[in-house]
Image (cartoon, rainbow, N blue to C red):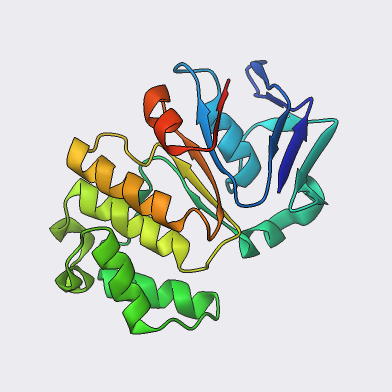
Length: 208
């Protein structure tokens, strides 16, 4: 699924971040933890982000058994990446239903309405939320909506950067229970500063 050997990131300010070797197998739920500034988000952005500003080097970096650089944008056919504060990227001019329709149409995906309703229910969201614009939702509702948008592609790999950041304990528990429910459907890589939270939820935790 993902294998990194001698992976490092260099920024223009001559800041270099090096990483231990990492391997994630199919259908694993992996946590990524470490102190603030250790490079957790930089790693995810370099692997999965668009327009990453740094330069990467490696002895081996394979995603879905293909070299990372050679894949290019092809990788987005197989993964969904939910960055930190991704809920703030929701288009303020369209409803959640419009967001869902846009993801489905742009990826040529068909989805039964009942499946959408089931995800809403599993994340303790009312169906009426589909009519809401982002400004009408709380931060926790937008975060859960973003997770639904990521899952519409039925990705082989779901990447989540601090999905519980700045959320209350009840919402964090709802998200954790939902991820535990879908863990057999996809590989999951999740970053959190909360090591104990990851240990309770994940198959393995990688500390940077």
